[in-house]
Image (cartoon, rainbow, N blue to C red; front, side, top):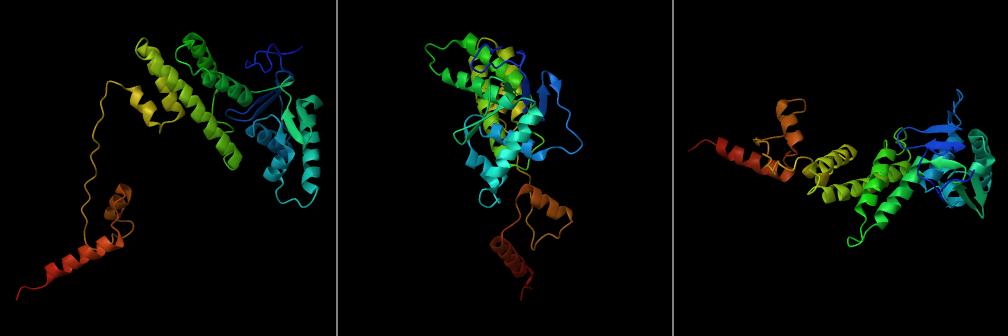
Length: 274
């Protein structure tokens, strides 16, 4: 059977292979989870996650070699890539799941469904709806709902060591957050309850987002944050003391020049009056 779209965004279709990367890495063959052996095949899985992080479509072989076998001399990197592709196809149970042609490697979207690639398809749809005059907000709301349902966690949350995974994770979170906030700001005048729920989702996605946090509780006005009162005393506080902890947490450890000035003033005050 052929998927109903060039790349359907629903995992309800009976895909031969499913790869989940939003959250922890999970593989399914015909809806049955792939149970890894005791010795996990790191290189095939590393190739799969790297390929997906680079977009999953028409990724140059040399880019994969540089990411996974940077220290391999001569043609050993290309030979290692060939071996890893063969092992990955065997792991997925379908040779057609991974395509290799014209020095490029791709995930076959007619055979394998990848949640991160489906998410990027949805984000591209949402980002294409930019004209406010002809904006179909009902359709946009459906797309954003699908985005939030699909984004069940950070990209490869259990893989913090690979720079490519961190970059892709941050990029996806930023794009998802932008569409959630865009829909929330549109719904706020007419449906504040739905907008508040979207703002809460945005805050959970990125607790450090000032825009999301500002919209979670719109009835609370901006408050002036009182700065901790730190009394500068002569000399440098000793480590382990309460003075040192307060000064360090407040970010107010005096610079060398300031400390010298305070110490000099203190010494002048200690001189006896003649």
